[in-house]
Length: 284
Image 1 (cartoon, rainbow, N blue to C red):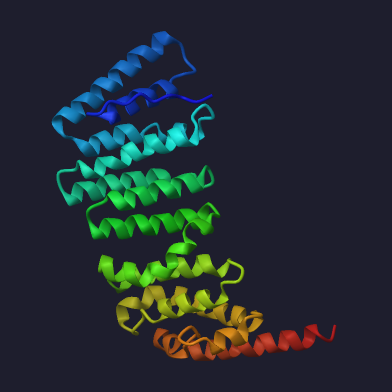
Image 2 (cartoon, helix red, strand yellow):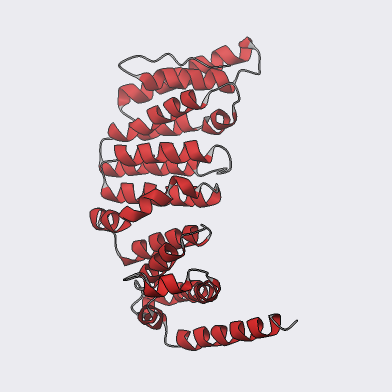
């Protein structure tokens, strides 16, 4: 069954509010549904008239979980409704307000990532294109990566990785944000078959964001784990020689050394242990 959402040219969001509320309260009687629909629609009307777009976003997002689980609503209609909600960022009175609206939308769409993750990512990319602020775009893209990883839909975001360097330059984000971004990409690529070269490329980018300063102490531990895991994957990889010979894509140990000097010892120990394991394994 397809739910028809009638919209007006002036304020399609009011029609979406009505349709959403009616759908959310469809399982109870009209004596309960009608007053609730009237109340929420009146509240939405007041938000529109007063230009309270953040409040409007909160109101519209309140029933999104039900929409995402509703079987009577087609994916096309659901995407339409969510896109109308995303369009609120274009009505915000400031970039800060638009960013707060985007945060609300991202929080809702990244909740329960296993339900229609591909559609959620598509909506997040629509939100990305609507946002005016560069910091907002960076936030939404990062949330799309989180959703892709949690929802096991990496294929939706992997094609965008070739533009990461351009994105970073465009957004103008700092080293900590770049580090989080490269780490997220690295972890996604780690589980993708046939992408060993890309995995090591982004691991190198991640490790290169460390310069050994004292304020990086908390992040060093995670970097050690990633580098150690990479050593094992590097030795196991069937693409080992291709990675070594690929120009600019090999794992540069200078980046690892910048993480912490002791990391070299850790890498050496892992290599020795792996060699011992292989030696024993072939003789059992």
